Length: 304
Image (cartoon, rainbow, N blue to C red):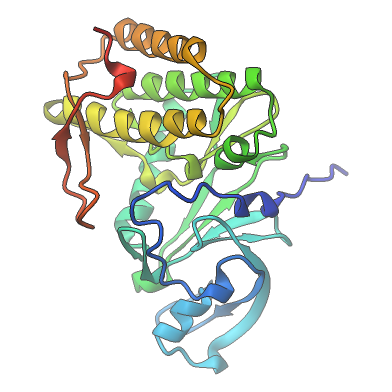
């Protein structure tokens, strides 16, 4: 009988605290942010089948304790609304009707639909060194009871932000991971698939292979908005929320590593003939609305 390697959830708590200008906005109860807790599983008139419900959602919806059919010991992850179930060794993504960073962390049907479409799209284009955590979407009569089960592969996985902040890998492997992130993102972008590659969504193994989690963040693009999607998602997630963070926590990196990274970006963009514009795009840091605006060209794409 094969023994499945359990996920080390403690690595989730070494997060990069400056990943968002709104990272201090977190309405999840403090007792459910870093410590294990009992997760109620309920059956109500609108659920049809037993569903896990985050304790904050249970309280906010004023659910009846008599509807609890089971309780499971779980651990919060860095995204707070996603919890780790050690008994089944899987992640559960749950609705939380509270704000975290820019918005409410509910789980509407459109996010479940996006997860299913992302699975179909990514499966069509396999890439060596890249895989994703399969997701099983559960639709309820009310979106307040939707949830997603996310399988964890039998591998020694590290959250990418943990690798960056703790420097648990050596310099060579960190660089290999960064290059893999750049190349895989641009590979899928060439197929009109845009991965939300902020550090929380990437897991890596000691060989530098990538494991993408949270398929509901994956987007497709119509040709008329392709340029702006490239400028927004690549410059914001890959460059600002990955490469910049990596250099910030790697004081031993300098111009040599910068040149390597820029050369990879330049070669990959040219080789895939991606129509990047001569500007970047981002979200204003003084407003919670996610309305993209043009900003100065990212230094990582400035090849002049």
